[in-house]
Amino acid sequence: MASAALGEELKCSICLYFYADPVTMRCCGHNFCRVCIDHVLNTQDLESRVYSCPGCSIKFQERPALQKNVTLGNMVEKFLSTHRDGAVISCTYCVDSPVPAVRSCLLCEASLCDKHLRVHSKSPEHVLNDPSTSLEKRKCSVHKEFLKYYCTKDAICICMSCRLDGKHRGHRVEILAKASENKKKKLRNVLEKLVTKREKTEVRVRSVEERRRKSQEKASGEAERVTALFIDIRRRLDDLEKRILREISRQEEKLSLSSSDVIQRLEIKKEELSRKMRHIEELCNMADPLTVLQDPDTGDLCDPEVERGDEDIEENGVGDQDLGQISRISHSLADIIRGVALYVQDPADTLLDVNTAGNNLLISDDLKTATWTETCQNHRQTAKRFLNYHQVMSRRGYISGRHYWDVEMSKLGVCRVGMCYPSIDREGDKSVIGDNTKSWCLFGGQGYDNQCSVKHNNNQIRLPHQISSNRVRICLDYEAGQLSFYELCDPIRHLHTFTATFTEPLHAALWVCGGSIKILGRSSYEEP
Image (cartoon, rainbow, N blue to C red; front, side, top):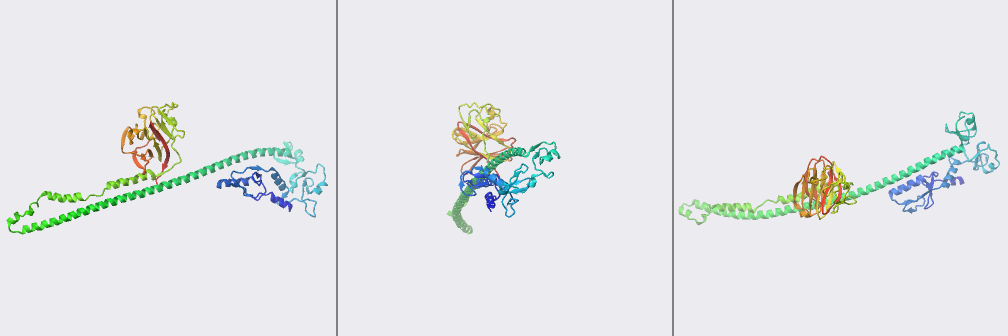
């Protein structure tokens, strides 16, 4: 009973088996198998990042430290060596009542309790060992002698006769204790490597879990952003629908009132004409010519101005609906859809390439802002650097897909934003974006009274209206050959679209004088 109780104390409360590589939680003193408690703590780290002891449920903010319990491990090892299938190894000579054995004699192949051990032979050939039921395994199956040596060539334990006269004669051998220590040394080296690999694996697991957590957070944030975006789109569409319907109703009411007035005037005119017709018919039926010729009401019947007056009533009294106004309002719908609804954010960002920046440009540490400065920066000369102008390109170019990026231009100075091929000239008059066949841009600023233009191959198109916002969106549809510019106002407004057949990667490009330009982000979009 005592042995059974001890066996229960030597079992892990998680797996319910005997401790394997037992460790102690320093915070509360409870013991567990290392693999079992690591699995529990990893699960808690993944689910809530709040740790607790499975034995006492005490909670900890940080992952509790584990210390190997050597004493407990030795107890388990010794207990298991004296038991088989959970049964206590009893003394061979206590036949009346089983008494637990404390040692086993290899020569006698018997297990001994304390009482019988005291009277047992002390001669050297009687080799004593921990209690075991497998004493026959400690003797040579051929010579029935004790196994004393280890043949390194055949990797087997042998007896004295095997070494001197048997098939292992002449082989290199070691005594069992030395061979065991050599093997333990190798096993410890393997164990150290396995521990190192396991630690590296744990680090990788935590790294992957952290990336997964960040990815989930980013996906959640992106879902919220897209949800808010479409809520805003629906709000804009509802407002636009109401504006158009109000305009149609207003014009319909105006047209109805105008039509009623014209109809009333025409009815009066019709009565007047009917009266004249009756009078003329009466004159036509008269026989007296003098009466017909001297009638005072027929003097202006053939006057052409009367006919024109009738036409004026019809043409000027009733007009058509102002479809142009409705069309202009409806055009906002296209701007909302083209400028906002088709976009889904991409995690990649547009970053400026410092190696291309002109010497009068300061590039921010986050590679997002280009600022003009009068002081020459004396950048290191590279083949990609713009030499004559304060201009910079993005690191990455796009050879396919649909992309957009937003910029915020300072209210001071003059700015150009657009895209260019990497083969654009790096010096000379043709190196400025918009002034050659390899770039497209939108430009404006303080010197242009907020009147913007677009430019390609030095051909300038002046936009018909001023822009009120200093934020602009540049959209690229590479396969469709379209590069579009939008003003980021409410609602978003389409400014211009270039159409071309792109033949090289397209990089974002900035040119600034007397101010700064900040990149707000870069994204990709898909069809809804």
